[in-house]
Length: 148
Image (cartoon, rainbow, N blue to C red; front, side, top):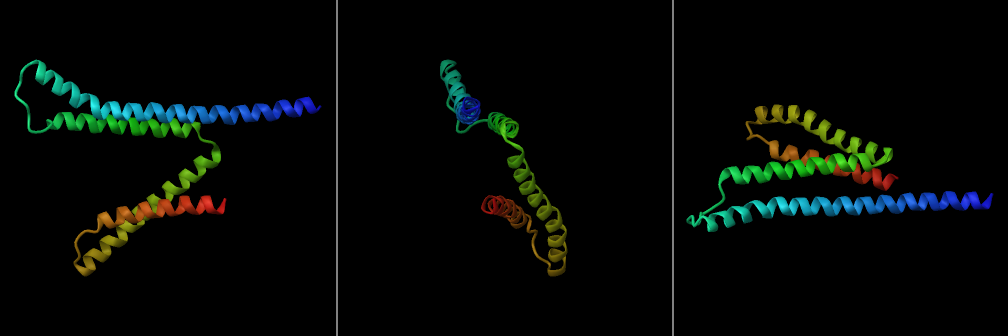
């Protein structure tokens, strides 16, 4: 009977260890992808310009910048999906709660700020609302961690 208990404990420890390895592997892959996306296109563009003996440019073309931004966004989305699949139900619930706080503050705050802006003839306060909803999400995440 003790052998079975020891086997269960080792099985659980192995799962935790493997999960940690997967997390580190995922982080390394994502960092390498992000660095490659930011570094390779300008490098290749400069290499091709030099090889073709084109005059140097003052800045990167807008298409190149947009392409890099879209590729980075794709890496971020893939990282989120990959991380979501690796997380357990408690982590998922905490994340959903934090995003719900961001959404509620943004949704309700938008209407309230519009009324205040019109009544007081103020400039749009969308940036302050964005920061406020971000702060609400962070506060919910911290509260959940502290509360346990």
